[in-house]
Amino acid sequence: KGEEYFPAVSLHSPGANLIFNFGHKTFMFDLDTYANGLISWICEEITHHDVKLSDPAGNAQVLEAITDYMAYHSNTETASELSSLLQIPITKTPDELDCGKEIHQLLAEKNYKKIHEIVLTRFNFIETEHPRVYLSLLCLQFFNLTRGMCVQLKTNDMTLQEESEALRDIIMLGRNI
Image 1 (cartoon, rainbow, N blue to C red):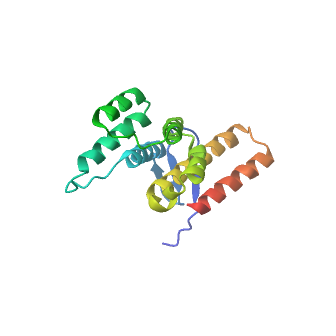
Image 2 (cartoon, rainbow, N blue to C red):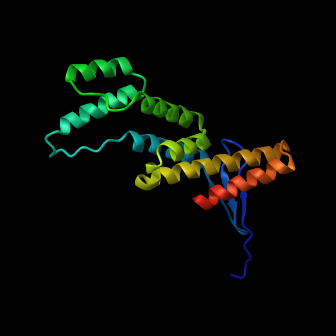
Image 3 (spheres, rainbow, N blue to C red):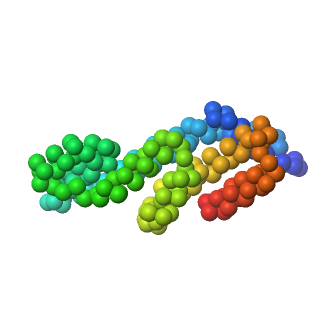
């Protein structure tokens, strides 16, 4: 009632909460828990394979997905053995398998910018066919950029030009979200 709101955001370092101050009451948000939840969700989403149980070829689809998954996660010998035993080909190319391994490694390293670049150049269908995964990647990249900039500003490790470039990157990414 008649109070003025002064929005402010504080984001200092990993483990810190995202703090929103809207003038009269502070709202805290655990950004790390949210980001880790997004990573888990993305991993689940990209490794999920829908199979209709009424489909007579359902078993073949399941076994094909299993062999692809095993090959994708570096269990190539086991996947090849299973593939030849069941006479089901591994459908992913070596290039696709390497890229998949790279994405999982980058997720573990929290290198969202590189993942975003890979998605845009090699898997641009994700943007249209899996918009929630794409949006989550953008959000994670946005959080990572913002946090990195806050840490650098706090320690005065950035030049004025670096600050303006980082701000430009964050604003451009924010517009894409």
